[in-house]
Length: 133
Length: 419
Image (cartoon, rainbow over all chains, first blue to last red; front, top):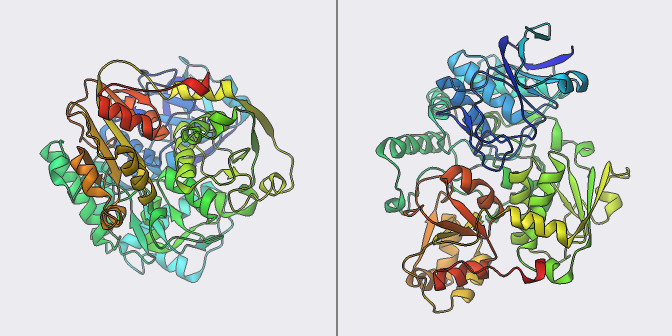
């Protein structure tokens, strides 16, 4: 399966596929790791430790700070899989790695890989790609 | 790997100190992710990172400031955590006050101008057509690209200050011609004239466009050609909240879209969406979570109020008084407030019971006293984010409806033309 690593690293976890993009700011509560955007169809879902799969980022440019903060306190997803590159998500993960040496990999999956991902399955992201475990 | 100049390499190697080196490392990582061929110069930056979201952002700013970080281009600062002109309005705890203050201090120390506004495009000096800048804050990004025709990519926290400290950004995204052309066309063909002429059609269209386009560049056909900057501000802010819109073309109104063909850059559209009154009515309804029940507060000025909006509000209030049970806030910048005050617009509003908030905004920091009732707004952006951020119900209406509701103490929204 083909992945492009925007921020390389390894992660394993349970997939959570979001039906719609989310904004980390106004969407992720860094204290609890929950999706708090009440308008999002999966509002209330816990993102902590998940392999978060979503089509793209959305909304406020404060999202980088919120993601970095969630990575710092340990409530962030284990990795983020996107269908298209997203600077704002990448930046949050990049700065958290610079400051705290914690890596939340950010990858872009090709259409086939992306569409094959199902919520609830366990996957591993490695330098080689994505594998079901 | 992008092509680098000697100066880029020197910055990255740390020859100008640890802060520009860290900044250049991040710029280069972003350039590689974007597969940018080179870096380009920017003439200015607008920083969103000065709003406190947790210690990660503070750690980053203080590391840069301690490492000798100093902006090399004119740099404005976005809304932050505290209203420094009206500190009594802040209702957060001491820890948040302290952290917010430290963050604001770090960005001023690095040379940022303490504008504390999300609408830097309402300042006297602003970038012109084709000028490259590095702006963060989603509503500012969409405005500068769409309405001014200056060029910024969709920058977020952190890269904004990295661009300000180095004067460089990846040559990617909306800095490049090919990415500025419209991909999706919204044709407002089936929309009733009365709806098109209403003030709230702009945030409602923005909300719909954001929902339907994601991160693509939309062209909107059929908006009034005399749409004001405030109207386009409201449209862009809503589109950047419900979607990832960083640029739109209002055909016949915005500088890169004299015609639909020019907005599309000579290519066919990927998608065309015919918009009718019914679709807009549904989008409008989405912006309210509740339109009845006790009215706790009214908040306008998200993005920050302009002088023109102050004039309109003053005309609507016209000597009446806001119900003392209802909190009424206007969010604006200190620069606009000074201009509005010089016109004599501010004292009558304060006398009427309206609270002016500067440097920050009611939906990002604890200011509202009563959160047990419905909060009313004319902002698509505020309506979008307040339920999650503040845990309140929101009623969306026009500025006139906000004033009417404030005076009577009851939510008054007229849906007449939208049925």
